[in-house]
Length: 423
Image 1 (tube, helix red, strand yellow):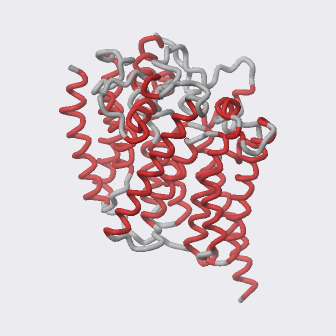
Image 2: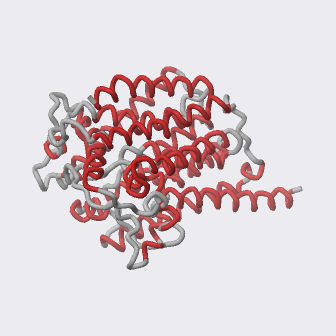
Image 3: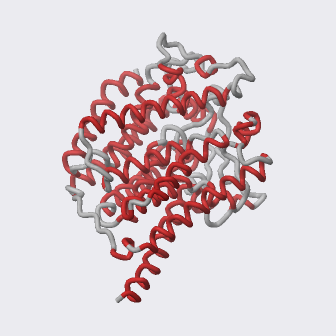
C-alpha cells in the first residue's frame, strides 16, 4: 500500500511542485527540480522492487519519514519560490574578476587540488595511477591522507572555478585544467567527484553559458552525457570485478530481477547506487531503535569539518548505529540516515528543512554574483546525490564552499589592486 501511495499520490504532487517552481522562478534548474531528479525519482524507482534483495514493503516509519521529507524538500521550497517569484538573469560580474588576477588565482587553486590528488595517490599506493592496480584502487577510492584530503576532495569546486575563468578569459589552459580535473578521480576508480563535477558544470553553464543552446547542440549534449554515463557505469562494473579478476557482474550482486539491463548494464548499476539505498535506510530504521546521535551526524560539516571532534577517542561522530546493507555492492543509506539518527522521525524535519532553505538562499543569490552561482552549484551537486548518501551535511562539501569563497576574496583583492594601479 505504501508503494502505491508513493507512485500514485506522492509522484504526481512532486511533478506539480516541479512545474510550479519552474513557472514562478522561470528557471528549469532550481532546488525543486534538482531534488526531484536526485532524490524523488530514485525513490519512486525503488518502489518497483526491481531487486530480489528488497523486502516486499518498507516499515510504516520509513514511509512516514519519506512523507516528511517530501514536505521539507519539495513542498517547502516550492512555497518559498512562489513567495519570492522570478529569480531573474542579472548576473553581476565584477571588473575585478575580469582582470588576469582571477585567472591566475583560479589556476593556482585548481593545480593545488589536482596535485594533492596525485600526491595522495603516490603516498597511499606508491604510484600516481592506482587504477593500474585495481585491488589497491578499490580500497583507496574514497580514502585520502589527512590535510591532503582537504584539497584533493575539492575537484568539483576546482572544475567550477576553472569554468568561470574560461568563460571570462577564453584561454585554452583553463579548458585543459577542467578536463584534467574531471578525469583525475578516475585514477583511483572514484566516480563520485566526477558526478559532482558534472552537476556543477551543468548548473554554472545554465546561468553562464559559453554558447547558445539550440536543438542540434542539445542533442549532441544529451548524446555525450549518455556516453559518459555508460562509461561511468562500466567503470563501476569493472571496479566490482577488479577488471576481470573476479567473475562478478553488478546485476548479479544486487539480484536484478528485470528482463532489461540496458547498455553496458547501466540499469542495475543506477538502481543499486540510488534506488536501492532506500532499502538500506529502511533497514537502518528497523535496527536503530531509540538511539540518537545528538546532532553530530546531521552537522558533520561542523563537528568534523571545523571542530575536528572525530579526533577525540570518546567521540562516535559519524557513527550511524547498526544496520544491515542489502549488499556489499549497495551499502549506502541515503541522506536521510543521519537526520533520523540524530533527531528521530519527527525531529529529522529540522536539519532537512534547514539545508533546503540554504540551497534556496544560494539559488536566489546566484542570480546576482558568480561566487553565489558556484556555491549554489556545489551545494546542488550534494543534493543531486541525496538518494545516495548525506553529502549535504558532509565536510567535503563545506570545505569546497569555503575554498570557493576564499578564492574569490583573494581574486577580488588582487584584482582591485590591479585596477587601482592601472588607473
